[in-house]
Image 1: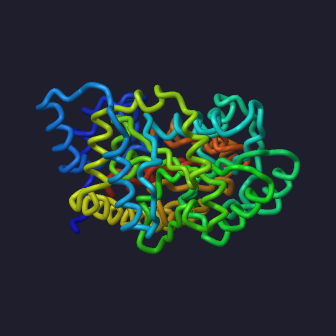
Image 2 (image 1 turned 180 degrees about the vertical axis):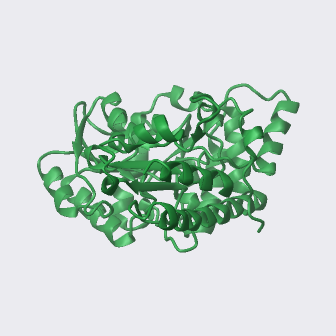
Amino acid sequence: MTKVEADALPLLRQRSSYKWRAYPEDVLPLFVAETDYPIAPVVAAAVEERLRLSDTGYVASARPVADAFARFAERRWAWTIDAETVRATTDVSVAIVETLRVLLPPSSGVVIMPPIYPPFFELVTEAGHRVVEVPLADGERLDLEGLEAALAAGARAVLLCNPQNPIGRPHPSEELAALAELADRFGAVVVSDEIHAPLVHPDGDVTPFLAVSDAAARVGVCVTSASKGWNIAGFKCALIVPGSAATSARVDGLSDEVLARTSILGLHASVAAFGTPEGEEWLDGTVAAIVENRHLLRALLDEHLPEVGYREPTAGYLAWLDFRALGWGDDPAERILAEGRVALVPGPTFGSVGRGFARLNLACSPGVLTEAVERIAALR
């Protein structure tokens, strides 16, 4: 396994993605969850082959990517999936919305657990439901008492993020099992966003929600994608994985258009990512680079910003930073951008519990990460 190296800034600034077009060139963009690593060669080759064949029409079937993901899940997590039940769509956000629409009556209460990926607030309402907030206990653990109270009060779904974005924590299996029992008892469903799960670190432990217990399989649906692990969000391919035959039958109510909107290039890119030894080797090299930067960020903060709170993630490449001790207000990212020219994600967008925090994307070169922290430290 060879560690993946981030592209140099001059090359990165030639990209046309939102990360590299949202701000002027004097800003270091460490906000949106897109990495600075080059695409995996096996993924690029798979897409180039489709282009050579002018194979750019509509997707015929989700089965190729479903089979590849099922093999990946078995190898990485000992999780057995019935590939025949897996559906494909454009991205995980669409998968969440469409799944919540088909599984719940209109205007159902859907629990989310801040601090949480900001679009969760909007995705629930887009699906025609109501947001019910149950913040994480101590900023990292599932609040099982709060979840029980919300379900007892009538909420009919839990939108789970595993590993949790922004804190980079995979939820322990015992917490997931307890959540599954609660959902089963109250007749609720759990939709588990596991898009960051392939990026678990060597000292992390991801348990797919559907694999944690029989109850989890009964109540759960997993939504996931290769988009974060292999940095291919623009290819637009995600998966919906029902946990049981009964749930699969309900998911059959999805419109045919949900599959038809999947990118054929994204499907083949995802097959190469999930389904080849080269794809997994590249993923391991990416994780190695992320872990190095995770530790580097710890050292940089200790040296330059010891007041900033930071719990190292054990999955993904996002750092949740607590700036409250510096007194920079509810949205420290605002000052950091205006004066330090570093773009982070404002903490309050993750829920009210995010006031005084900001999220930093550490999937960049060590040099960029070092310069970003030094710029922020200069504001003290």
